[in-house]
Image (tube, rainbow, N blue to C red; front, top):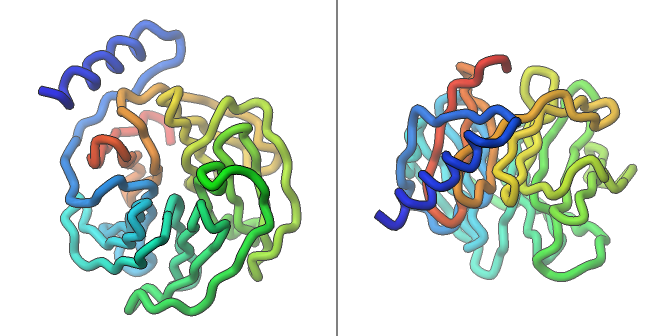
Length: 236
């Protein structure tokens, strides 16, 4: 019952706002403590990687069942993406990007980003944009975008005042998709100038991770609830 009441409250709040809301068709508990982000694996479009701020990197099936995992004690992973069969996991507290091979979760290298602020005010999301050949990272609040080249060197950073706060980012159908956990908001964003194209409310408590599956369904992981949600997206 503890999980039902907050969900119903969010559903009511979303329904009275002018911003349209999406209703999940799938919702399931996952055996991952405090999941912080999610992305597709490279070789199997029905599998996902999920990271947690307990230092876990987990591979799951399409319904969130744990298939394999590794844990790096002391790590505070908040973001994950893939590129060229490598996993890029971001440790928020340490301002560090750890790069692993997908096949065996072996750590290949670590890169540090020089970004000031409190330990829990670091990078919340990372994604590779193949057309622009760059990584894009986001800072939660004040909302900021950091652009990196393929060598994980910072090439640009900027405040994006059009966003109140940010908790995750993904790239799909030639657009960026930003997630805000405080506003329970998904925003479709132009990758050229970070202008907002469209937005939707989602009835999810503390949404922390976002991605799309091979069928254009939207996936969200909730940190507080340790749950996976799926949404049929009307116009991806």
